[in-house]
Image 1 (cartoon, one colour):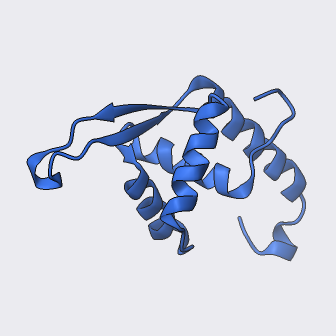
Image 2 (cartoon, rainbow, N blue to C red):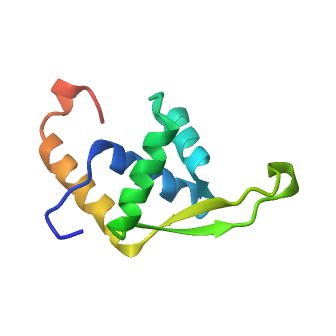
Length: 110
């Protein structure tokens, strides 16, 4: 991601969830994390589509793991953030803070 390019809202939420899950982020756990923390309902397909796009951009990486017997041995993909992904989150949050500066009273947040 080139400097000056920012994440979309959903990409930003996905990356924040991946960071929070600290290496244990699977598609469904990422979706669950977003729902739990934001109350925003997300379509599982949208999560996987966004993760694929973020991986193509080099912002996340994934590894395929062999499933367990309780998962019928189905493989699954575990996601982690890359250095570029961390930079993209930081840049996007800096832009949001800059735009929000001075609006605390109007927006009622701290």
